[in-house]
Length: 95
Image 1 (tube, one colour):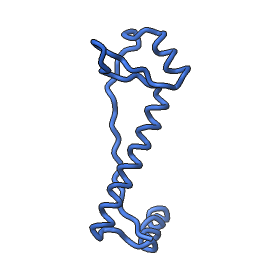
Image 2 (tube, rainbow, N blue to C red):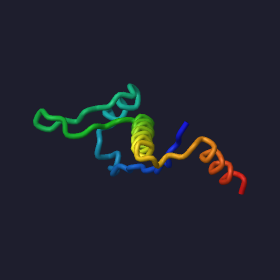
Image 3 (cartoon, rainbow, N blue to C red):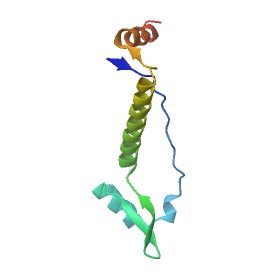
Image 4 (spheres, helix red, strand yellow):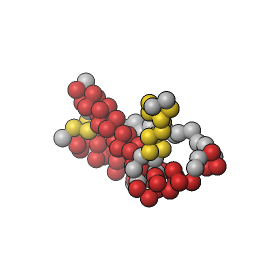
């Protein structure tokens, strides 16, 4: 099996004070765990979603990005063998 190096990146959203939102919107998103699409002139302009849902989505996106990078690295011959990867990991933990 071949492994590739993975670079971890994470995006952080902008924040807004709760007082700018109606409490019912927040309660709906929290209770249902479903996103709320905010529209302007009949078109979706933003999405409000539960923080746990957002973090879960970010984790999944990060994993998919890591997989894509890994596949690209392996296709370019930049992967390393299972034994070499194992030695690298163990070296880090045995310091």
